[in-house]
Length: 359
Image 1 (cartoon, rainbow, N blue to C red):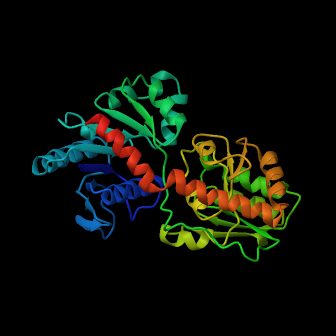
Image 2 (tube, one colour; image 1 turned 90 degrees about the horizontal axis):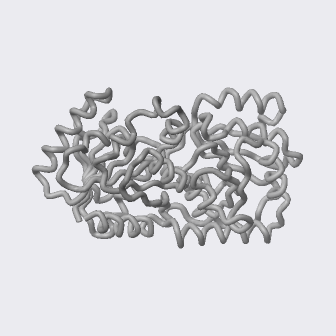
Image 3 (tube, rainbow, N blue to C red; image 1 turned 30 degrees about the vertical axis):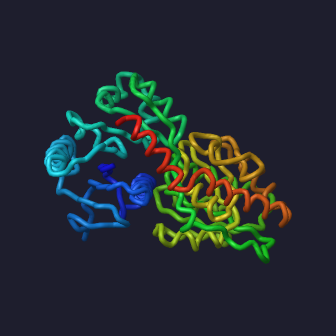
């Protein structure tokens, strides 16, 4: 199969959509498909390169709409005339309108929690969601919540849940020898409101057991609020803000932690959660979006209500009191679940079957 991905986000750009598009494309190449990616230019990027067997093209297209749509549509039609592509797979809303009028199937992966926020508004403010999807042959989404949101727009085509995935060779189990009595929690998120990071900060101040350390990998506007909360509670010395961390450096960082926290208000099947599981970290996550699909309660992690600092603090106290034997059981179960259900090759094979349905 010859597949064309279109995504505004792709490495070296960081983020969930960039990671998903890259890893899925790489897995498709490993399954024997020819994959092209049309994406945005970044500083110092080449107009064409081969990355992990993927043909990456970065056309010069203005970012602002409607100029982006016009420019990408023009480039895409020229690109398709020169190559016999079987299917176009769009990641994210911005490129979607540029794929109208094509004579090959268009698959759309609805990644964004912004889609959910738009549906919370009155109908008049929801935008032209239905009309933007009318030409799409199939919609994929990495959470059941996003699947239902897509159907609510009035989209009449097939909608399928396809989880995010993880490279279980890159993110592998940590060694659980000589466990420390003082456990380390990792928060690997953008520090923005929808990720619930301020609620997590408050939960740490409410925890009765203060035998913990915290690693925070991410940047964002909520950092100043979090720092203020930690300072007021006199736990600044227990928290380390690491800033933005390259994905290539994350495997080593996960190995320094014991638990991974996902305090989100909105979330798909969290890539951070999957990377944590593959690294042997049990999860503490909110019961929203795709997070419950990751966590087997009491086996690979624990679910808590969103927006609830007190519930989170109680769960932190609970997991800090676990015996080494209990912790190792959770850690090993997390690794096994990641390998069986979420390795990118598993996800790519499921996506491949859906492509064949469309074709």
